[in-house]
Each structure stands twice: as structure tokens, then as C-alpha cells.
Length: 229
Image 1 (cartoon, helix red, strand yellow):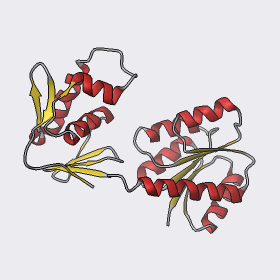
Image 2 (cartoon, rainbow, N blue to C red; image 1 turned 60 degrees about the vertical axis):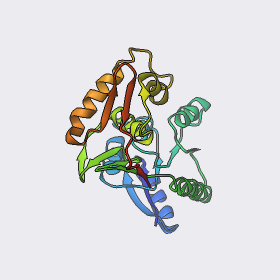
Image 3 (cartoon, rainbow, N blue to C red; image 1 turned 45 degrees about the horizontal axis):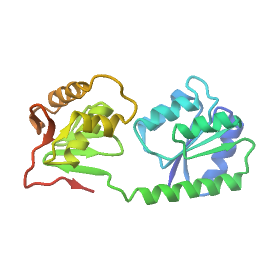
């Protein structure tokens, strides 16, 4: 049974959504503001989030942005803001759909089902990578060494993922900048060295990163290949 987080500060609409969606066969968790929404999201996993925009404390755009830094969980924005600019902003933040109020409950339920179907197909993609005693949780951006969690920043995680999935290949600083930063970076490419230094410190004995002087970095090419599942 899919679990849906409903984030809505209007309690009458919240109750309406809760009753209809629960009756349709979904498990429902409620939040009335942006801070509560992020707390609920951090406590448990959800299959979909219904997200109002005009929320107290942190608005829906902010909630969506924070969640998208960590997860691709489907998000449907459900809001009274109906301008093209508002819709484009929501979609630019990678919301999966944008529905304006007033809305049809039968149409909303069908949109929820459609988004969940798309998400189920995408879930067939690799979720973890295991290399020696390291396990990378690709969706949760978490790394475990010998079952102990290692706290990495998103960029550190992405660099480690790239090195492991390209095992044996030397990745230059420019390779990593183009792949991970794309067009967002305009500074000194030596920022990669800083991230590698921090990675090595955090990985400790589990550090397999090799420096190729004057070229870049790689994870040693060995008989053991990364297991992607």
C-alpha cells in the first residue's frame, strides 16, 4: 500500500484530502506547515507527497527544494497559485505535477495513480552500489562502510559514486566538474581536490581513492567489480 504525505495548512482541505485518499486505498500522513513536512519526511519514507505552496514557516517551494536535494520521491503541488510563473517555478524545482485549486478529487486520484505508476517503473533502476565494504544508497545519498553510516555532503557522495561506477578509469578534475556541476560552476577546478581530501578523511580505512599525479583520480582497477542492484 503506497504511503502519501499530505502537506496542507487549511485544515478543512486537509481533512477532505485525508478522507478521500485514504478511502482510495492509500496510507496517509499529514503535515500543516513546511517545518512539520520536512520533519515527517525525515522520519519515514513516502511514495508520494501532495504539497501546498502557501504554507507557514517554510513555503512549498522551499520544502520541494530541500527534498529534491535528497530524493526523487514524486511530488504533486496542489495550490491556489495558478499563474504561469508559479507553475513554471514548481516544475523547475522538479515537481512531478502541478494542480491548481479548486480541483476535482476524482481527477486528483487519477493523477496520483499515474505518478505512482511512473515512479514504480523508475524504481527498477539501480538503488545501491556495493564495492568491497562500501555500500552507496543512491536514493538516500547515504554511504555505509562495514554497516556504519558515513556522513557525506551531496557533492562528496556524487564524486565517490562517479569514481566507483567508473572503476579503473582516471577521472580528471574537468571530467568531474562537467559531470557533477555541469553549468553551475565558474570557479577554480581545484575545488575537486578539497572534496577528495574531505572524502578520504571521512572514509578513513575504507578509502580506495588513488591520486594520479597531474591527471586526476580513480578507484583502483581490481578483480572485484562494483555490484549495482
